[in-house]
Length: 83
Image (tube, rainbow, N blue to C red):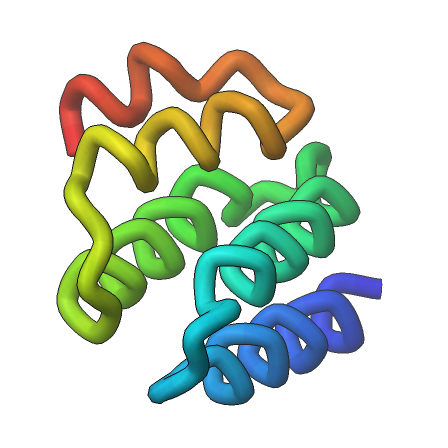
C-alpha cells in the first residue's frame, strides 16, 4: 500500500532532522522506498526524497547519490545523473 510506505518514509526523514545519525535514517527511508519500486510514481517519489535530503541535511550530493545507488533496488544511476 503506497500510502503506508510514504508515511513511514516521511517519519524517517522528519525524525532525522538535527540528528547525528541522519544518514542512517535517510537510508531507512530509502529502504522503505523499495516497497514502491513498481508504483507508477516511483521516479517522482525518489526525486522528491533526493531533493528534500539535499536541501535539509548537510550531505554532499555525491555521498547521497552513492547511498541511493547502494540502497534502492532499482538501477537509478541514470535517474541521478539527470536530477
